[in-house]
Image (cartoon, rainbow, N blue to C red):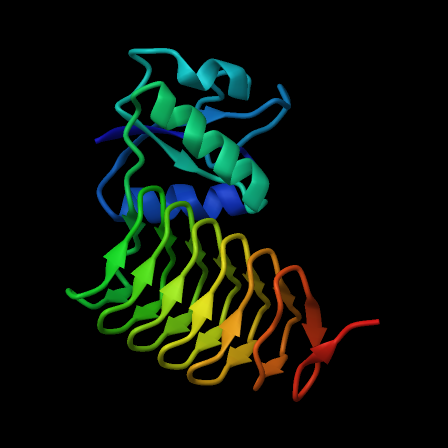
Length: 202
């Protein structure tokens, strides 16, 4: 499949290499900064031009911000562009797991049995998700984040680098778990928690 990348920053570089490693043909990238360069790929113009017919078969989301990923994914769907699931070949995804459109699964990720991941989610480098978890659309597991079994993660939630959520807990939509935190109680929607055990930030 021939895809174009949306965004030209650091996260986009990782997505581009994951897409290439997964066998996708990355035709170039769109970014609103005309001076941006990215791994020798061609800058194809601003983001607004990404929805033109004929440039590519699909798009890959190269931005970390959940609200932008949501907006771009919905725009791509409206334009009839494919939103491939990108799984780095050095990730393990259970055959019983389900990944939504536009998800990106980076190198070293482990996704175990019966996991469901919503569209546009990011499973970043070395993250792991154990059995029967539900990860909401546009959520982001940062590098090294860990979800034990049967965790529920709301839409646009963020689990920071090396943070952990113990089994059976839930993290509400748009909540943020700081790097290194250990979640042992449910986290409300929109809350920000940090520490061991994780507590609401002041």
